Amino acid sequence: MDILLNAVTKYPLVTAFVVVGIIMVLSTYIGKIFNNRIHSSAIAIVIGLILAFVGGKYTGGKHGISDVEIFAGIGLMGGSVFRDFAIVATAFGVKMEELKKAGLPGAVALIVSMILSTAIGAATAYAFGYTSAVDMATIGGGAATFIVGPVTGAALGASSEVIALSVAAGVVKSISVMILTPFLAKMAGLDNPAAAAVYGGLMGTTSGTAAGLAATDPRLVPYGALTATFYTGFGCLVVPSIGYMAIVALVG
Image 1 (cartoon, one colour):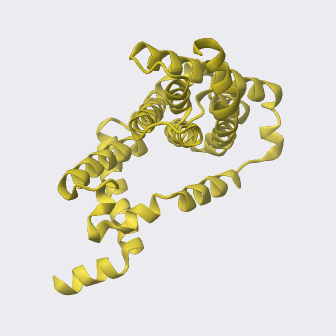
Image 2 (tube, one colour; image 1 turned 90 degrees about the vertical axis):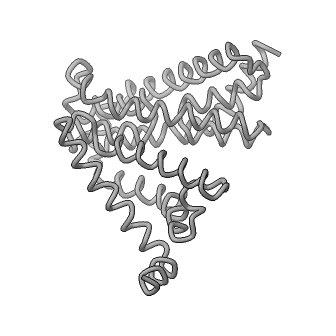
């Protein structure tokens, strides 16, 4: 046991890959119980959130399960470096001639969705008593994606509580898109790359869109993920600036 503990502590990133692999295998088996209508990625995220809660309660730390020494590598594996690597790797599966078919509809979908997501998030924040422009913009950004929210909050000087709420809003959206996409795919016409690209621009959440399309048709994943990635970058650019100024003009 001492040899095993020494190994997993000495090579934390390898340990993280093993742990996540086990979680994904378990999630796949659970998904089969639901005939794969709930994608394994959605199940894995729920398991991850549970483990983060348990890790935080056990250690009293702020980084979830990675605060436990033998699971420290999960903090690195779940960081921005591997996330960006995965996004770039996914984008290499795109055929540009198929992506071009989305054209103007994809761009319009991205802009309209960003405006609606931010407005709905900001209005919800206002309804629950977060009436300052900074708080509304941060939670509105979170309603776009759980990356845009923290970026907006950090840029505008929002409190950690509000930033946490923005992340929570984005996570709820991501999991909802994962679960609902397979059920809505036929109605939405998600049967070709152009439609997937537009859908990615509408939904915005890269993880939610990728997992939802994977449960629908894995061939569509690169197209939806690519526009969803543009959505995240676009949101990080416009929500702390144009979005914030629009909210200030409305609520002062």
